[in-house]
Image (cartoon, rainbow, N blue to C red; front, side):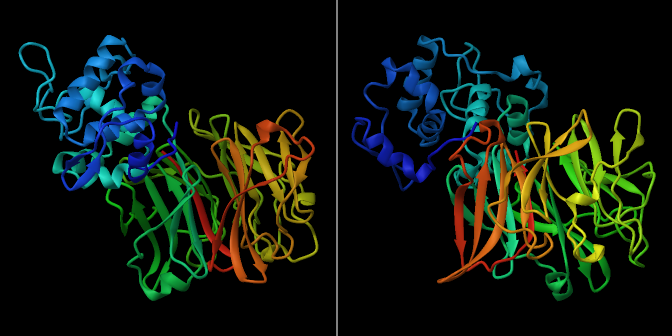
Length: 458
């Protein structure tokens, strides 16, 4: 669940809803509750972000009125007790939020509300507002920095997908598709070699991992949503590049690739973002590089790639995390999907994405989106791509899953220069006539080549 408005936009929304005169709190202008608030339960249910904003303003009278409304209406709010999280509160939660009479006390996280209710409100509010909330006081900063809210969001099923991009004329940026908002990340404190070398990226949990080479060898830089800073990530047990990878919640698996000497690998490793550790997994059946990875039906797959500098692979491999075994799947990525017009080493890894547990591929040769038939181990054409993938052998183009949508992100050269265009399409809507790709955003002065892209859902 995501919300439409930022904290800065709520004042105007509230004024238009018949609000009383504004109050000044901590140098910020806020508004009181709409007069109709107490008699309009639907308003409360649909505007948790508004409720959170009012509560954070610090007006005790408003807070007590809100709590009375919630109790009078018997509105259901998931508590930590019913989710088994009561014993897993972060260290910041020193006070219980209750006095001896069983009522919420002013020592709670949000005065006038029980801590469980306050945490639910924070979890349901948009994570775009978390940096602003962290600036209010030390309690909020510690809570958000602990990562507890993101764990609570996962248990509540609250997920927001952001797109992270690195293009030729800009550093890393994040894009919020719901709010249509671009956010620039801090500059990565890497050396010059890492800046200009080829890189690979992966989003896992609340971390963005960027893999590349520094003067001293392979390196991994990590951007954390909790600290909003870059830091070094521990290296794999066997550092590599040109590997296949994918995330599944707080874990990610990388498989294959090339080592520092150019040898093609068949080893694989699992990264746990909660622990910050790498674990060696059993080897695949075949070595492969320039491959792609994804999770499907709870299992990890690797398809495509090359077993040597000249030999392409059409088979795939499936890793079962319960049995810790690999299974080879013949002809899972046939040669028709990669084309034969250019040498294998010049082609990009397979452009694949999983939406609603269905696998899709952007065909580099025919500029078509194809869907994988799990039963028949075959591919069927779904629709055309909004950009050409064959012009650069699939390089410079991102094909990603973002919630229920497929994203195609690529460059476009127009009369006013080069831009990056973000296209989206929901497969669930089918391919009815007139239902074309939707343009989410156009990023100007960003070049026309996508070097790295990752989608983070948390």
